[in-house]
Length: 387
Ligand code: GLA
Image 1 (cartoon, rainbow, N blue to C red):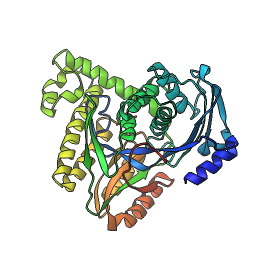
Image 2: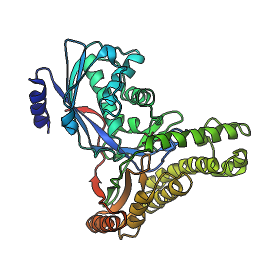
Image 3: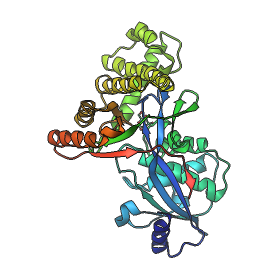
Image 4: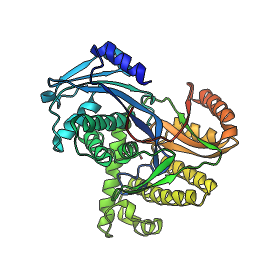
């Protein structure tokens, strides 16, 4: 891989003098969905698939960005002084957003760079290809300019750039999972204060299988922001009655006793999901610690049901995948993962059943939806590195 990337870099940029090769993973969230902007817990892990880059400094102030995934769009050149200029829909807004965000946070990028990217996270799959590019770029900036930032800082700057440069009001989960990833462990993160612990994922002969709806996400980002403001409104209604900082402060019982403070039925459902999903995530990590994979799987299914019925972010494609997955022998649990509205589901399946699982769910999905799903048997990997 490294040699191939360097070869392509040489073809595009003329030579490989001073160039280094980097990698940052993608992520999948096992449970704790739409809780990260509600002060709740999440439980994601980094994957061994992700984004590669070859990068070096330039002597001028030009940022020259090329992606092997979008070869037709060639090398995009922008000046550091014009970093605020975005091109609608261009993948370069992610690395450019990081250069901009580093500057805002006091880490001034003073030289241009040549960077070639290559990602093997399927585009639009909801496995955080954009957060992967952001964290990777942050890691490159740290390495090439010697900035004193930790991986956690890179995650926070990544979220800042996503929120303020790219206009998606996301929480911290994706960038944190990628920047802080650890092989064979998921990250139990409390988004209220960023305290976290690594939980080893020993699946005793089972595999993590990701199911991609292949549905192109269109309105996803605006719906995402809409859900977020519904939760914020529900929180401020609850705060008139009880003293809480986030929805994550509430137990299920406290929510039920106070939900009449929320004036709108949809907002009650959104807040209910945020509260119950947070509690489910805490219970799921507990179950894993007790080696109770069956309970972990049941909580995954309850998470999906809540995302379908109360949060309303699934849709026919994700529901079909999960429904068909749950019919299969050897399945321990399945749920949508990430923002929803398309993208992927995640399942845990006994190793000996994986082949039939993929065939059966794939056939049923194709018959019902009219196009094929994709399946990836994934491994949990480390955070960003120099290769
Ligand atoms: C997207 C966002 C995350 C998180 C998930 C839903 O992936 O980027 O911050 O909110 O959706 O859990």
